[in-house]
Figure (spheres, rainbow, N blue to C red):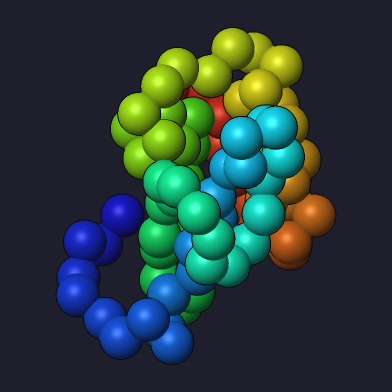
Length: 80
């Protein structure tokens, strides 16, 4: 990911609720941010999600994360 500082309006955030459901936008708890333009979306992976929420994701959870992001028109690689 590019790791450049940008205004919030130029970034997208995904978070994970306590019940395990992923969501886009601001919310409680930890989440991951990426710029909506450029290659950042293409570089998101399971490792980024695990680091952002500070816990591991099993294969099922990683698949849910990938499906969630693909549902938002993003291509994601879930392999590390």
